[in-house]
Image (cartoon, rainbow, N blue to C red):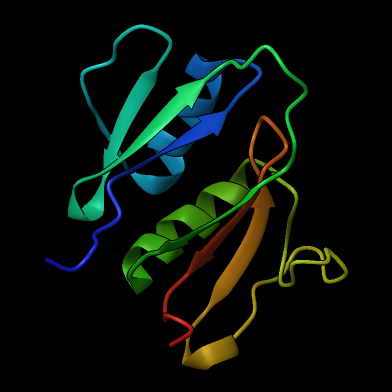
Length: 124
């Protein structure tokens, strides 16, 4: 069997707030939560687990492939809510999306300070 990505833990200052942010932007589904985790389910059965670790949170990068219609909805939310976003990962092109790899992409910071990328075409 080929390896399949199953889940990841996203360190959060406030796991409920972070989960709500991802639920809204990614249109994720609630999943049963337990113990230290607040869980969401995204495409292909991937589980996002939000936890509040007892250490300083280091920024991570998470990229999510979405279709064009989802991108339109998510980007509209960013603009409507005045959420800072960029066309590039170095945050030098604010307020725009990019057209790299034959699609569209945008970068935004989540409530815990992680870099989030939404893209409509995979890199490879």
